[in-house]
Image (cartoon, rainbow, N blue to C red; front, side, top):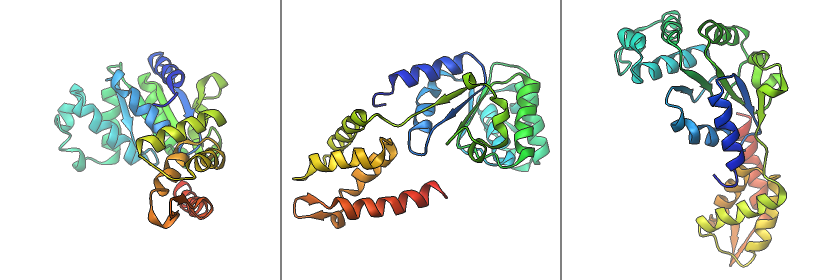
Length: 243
């Protein structure tokens, strides 16, 4: 977790406070990495890696509750959630709602894409009825990313933004990634500076470009071919982030 100590501590404090909040930042900034890094500190947190449909969310929550030994979920599904596939979407939602009544849990919804008002309403209903805090993770706080669930976080204090590295931080991060990947080239210092600049300080972009620099197609003798690498990176990155 390169130079993210402050953000990690802030994230832990927010989850510990048991208040719903929105974690947002651009693709590749490391939102999922931070969330999964602190999950071990919160055994009662229910993590949904993909949160684009009610079926995916409630089935993931039901399975997590059963595996955690929640008595309501175990009684309905078995400890290993073996009966989950036999349950309808309505039944699964009911199981989750009843299981959360015991309190103590929190819900973390990663990769939010709440384009459905009905989906957002279902999450708000369960969270409100069971007094379960929700941590939503999205690319931005705007409607096109957070979707209809953004109404759960009307106040600025209920939003945590994860930002790209500063220019100096991006250079340090690029050098650290290159060191770990044992990347070598005669123009390595120039490449590091360009990677930090072209990435805008985005950690995911930096890692991706350095990984590409290891491929023979982007090497000429002992140098990295920076321009063709960046052109191909942009094509790949745009396709991935807009999928």
